[in-house]
Structures are given as C-alpha cells and as structure tokens.
Amino acid sequence: MQKQRFELKYLISEETALRVRDYVRTYLDHDDYSVGRPNFSYPVHSVYLDSNDLRTYWDTINGVKNRFKLRMRFYSTNPDAPVFFEIKRRMNNIIMKQRGGVRRSAVDWLLSGSFPELDHLVSKKNPNQLMALQRFSELTVKLHAFPKVHIAYFREAYVSEDDTYRLTMDRDVVAEPNLTSNLTTAIEEPHKSFTPLVILELKFTNRFPDWFGNLVRTFNVMQGGAAKYVESINAIGHRKLRATFPVVEEPSRLSRLW
Image (cartoon, rainbow, N blue to C red; front, side, top):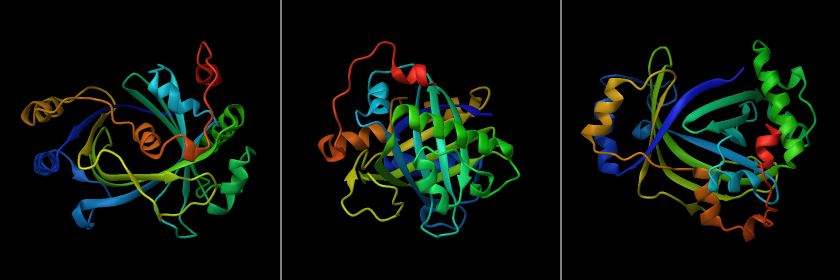
C-alpha cells in the first residue's frame, strides 16, 4: 500500500516564510513534532541510497517521469528511536511513499539486501510496513544501491486534522557524504544548499484547496524544483562520493526496476 499525495514546492525568503506562518495558522495546526520547539521546527535526517553511478540522481536531473529514491529517515541517535526505510516515487507532481520503521539493530541487515523479518519492525501492528521493507530490499539489490549522502534540515510543519492537507517549510539544508551504515545527527563538514531561502511545500491528497491558491497569489510565489538530494550532490561534488559516470540506457533502468 502506498500513501499518495500531490506536492508543490516553492523557494521563498525568510521574511515571506514568517508571513506564511501567520497565514497558515488560520487553516492548519502544528504537527505533533513542531509543538513547543524553537522556531516551531524539528530536525530531520535522511541518508540517501544510490548506485555507484548515481542512477536516481541522474533520473531526477533528466526528468524521468517514473522515478524513485531510496532513503533512511531518522530524527535522533537514541538507540530506541526507529529508523524509517522509505521509497519515494514521483510521477510528475504525484508522490507515492512506502515506508517501514525498524529497530536500529536491523539497519545493517536490511542494507545488505536481506529480506526483513517481523522482529525488525518497531510496530508489528501494520503489515504494510513489512511489505514496504521487502520492496525496499528488492530495489536495493537490483539497483546495487548503497548509502551515499546524509542530508539534514529543520522542518516547520502544519497539518489538517484528517491529514488531507500539509504545509511544510524546510530551512538550513546541509549535507555531507555518508558511504557507510553509520547513522549520526552530526555533520562535520556541512555543504549548504538553498540557504538563505526556505523550501515551502504544499501537500494535498485530492484537490488543490482554494486557500492554497490564495496563499500562492497573496505571497506571489512561483512553483519550482527544490530537490534536496540533487542539490546536495551538486554541492558536495561527485568525486567525494566516489561516483562513476553512468552508462546511457534507454529506457531508464529505474523504470524497469519499478
């Protein structure tokens, strides 16, 4: 099972972001992680996996319609905190995500391409998580994917009661190479991207609500691309990731994998 939604991205100034904050409070509430945080923001950490020739990176660069990314998302280094293995698939503006939360002791097992076991799950109540992890393992093996980049940023998030609508603002995006299974929140040599701009994302599951349209017009923002993984690799440089140049294939290998 996949959670499907539309995601529209905008790059805005910090001044506009503060005005958007005041505007959105009329329609949405802070998500559970934002409440009580400084600047209403919490840290997000992701380690992206890719092939040695950075196939998922190049498919984004080339605008391949049916593409995906593989990443591990985590929020702290607490040994008891879960690590979420995620598949993020994009078709134009439609985003479909699958993910499963596992114990940290299972990370190396899953990165080796081995199939997940029920005991790896943080919660055994949702069988869809096990299916997502199985698909993650399949794609990891077929793509020959390994950890490549650690990306971190601060997220300010708002959500409707039924999770139909979400608005997020991401700040201070930094990245560094991460070629191992080590999951840490420390970034020793940060490579910045998007600074000083803020990434605004409007997310909805069915129709684009009128008040989203009013927000876009009120603050005169222009939709555009803001791919954190791509921009982070551009900032770091391919050499530091030990990347090889891709062999040209048609159609995309990722389309066939999916």
